[in-house]
Image (cartoon, rainbow, N blue to C red):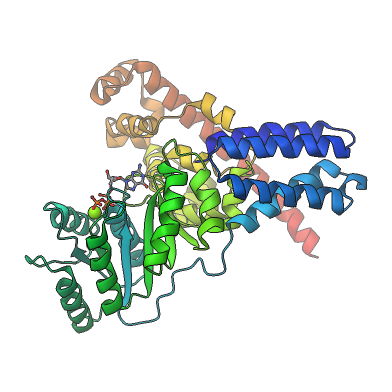
Length: 441
Ligand SMILES: Nc1nc2c(ncn2[C@@H]2O[C@H](COP(=O)(O)OP(=O)(O)OP(=O)(O)O)[C@@H](O)[C@H]2O)c(=O)[nH]1
Ligand SMILES: [Mg+2]
């Protein structure tokens, strides 16, 4: 996400940090570079202009130049301003009714149906009961698409074989009431620009169902077009929040950085993959950190907390302690890491890992599947006692998993190294623990 801009900010920051002394002249030069990078990333030119002049004013006005670490102060100002640019008062969903209603609206193909299902899964995982409503009666396959998604995530989908989407919505609300559903998510038909009839239909639905949230789904790849559309759309229908989709692709940061400032509507979610887990709540500060290349530790920890099973973590600790960590445990770890999402997206959250290093690592998500395939091709005994895996066993495992023998060798080498490291950790724990007790006294 935001790779192009991230690279540019990293090189700007390297320059600032390298400067022994910062003068008004090089403040101007740096601000000029920031301006150019933002424009290259397709950020709205008015937004860029006011953003950069605020930075320039603050850096020069607050006498940053005379402080001990002017470079760091300068960077902090950029970070604070970027957070302000992205921040909104109400970026959480406000769901106070029973059922609460979320209306998904937007242009054709923006990602409404997919986002409806992603959101359903997310809220369901927060212990809410959800129902999806197939109110797109325009496209024949739309109902089936939502039904399939609903099946995948085990969320009921309300549909009817009639054309009138308002009636479908009304009936769905009654059904949701009778089933004590907490949140109803209505998927509507995608409209084209200037489609008045569709707009009238949406307005009618909105007036009648009185949604708690009207989420405008915009395709992040379309940059300033998305911003202009959101602004126009908001005049016709009150939008309570934005979802920017397809932020995983080559989308530049343009839409994300301009849309709140231009439209005044908060960004509530970001779609970052085609998979149904590919949605994240939008946080201004975390996003600013990511754009500037500072990583996002909070999101990383949250992801890990969700993916890692507490009991398994406890067992792992014990296994490290008694030296019984085997390849079954190794596989368990892999499975848990896989649950955190695509590896590249996880790596992006690590502070200080510059994007050019990431590129060099060129980590492929299949790699983790290949490792799993190799372990799966071992017998249970081999997994418990990896020491017995000799040349001929390695050959058999390689054939069984369809991976080269070198890869099998590499995996075993990594495993033995890991085991060695665990022994060291265990020793350190022993040394540290008595010391800590001493400190406590
Ligand atoms: N990579 C990626 N693809 C996405 C994302 N969100 C949606 N898509 C893809 O975009 C395409 C369109 O998504 P839909 O959810 O059908 O879009 P829609 O707005 O409901 O489309 P209509 O109902 O035809 O107006 C699908 O192929 C989705 O898989 C995302 O965050 N990342
Ligand atoms: Mg759809």
